[in-house]
Image 1 (cartoon, rainbow, N blue to C red):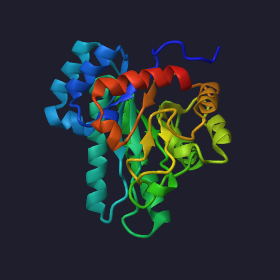
Image 2: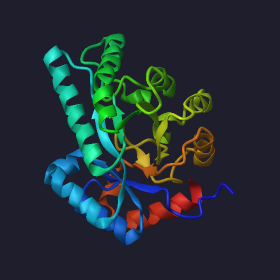
Image 3: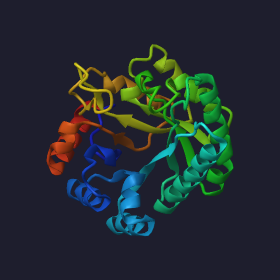
Length: 273
């Protein structure tokens, strides 16, 4: 009964084929009959928000999330304010493209002060919550694997993300569960249960062994060591039954013809997720 018999929840996270433009990605989803897409902001920027919206609406594809907001910590008050302004633009993009989820990658420390940087993250989220709420957009805090603490995010466990999210109503701030970042955590299942009603997204890929590189280390589901099915069941038990994004950073995948990637993605999704 837990087998995914269809791909109705499958979302193609656009970074999985980063070489594709938004139009190419949407057309690829249409050919593969994939109903959802997660859109990256640098792809919106290439053609503008108006054209992005038209492409998505004309295709009838649903948008599961916008990637990404966040990156709150910065060395000066002026820089921090510029990042708040950029997050407001990201919220506008999410609202315009018809998704209620903005994924937050919270950002690294501008210096060696991790405690201070984490406070900047909390302060930054507090500043954008009212703006997001006005526009019907929820903020999904995505904890990143600890190996990214120096370069991408000082929020590294689901417990940290839950701590921040619980300061807000469930309709304002939640969490993103990404298996690549969280599979290792001995407290994962407790924290998924704790996040009940607050999970705004679920991302799948795999952890390749040996790990090829810090950033481009994700594999297609089934190519690595993550036991995917129990995590999905836990996320569903915590109340999340929304789209499931396949998000893969991997140069070999990027170099593979896109339609081949989507075909394998569908196959592995049904078999393993």
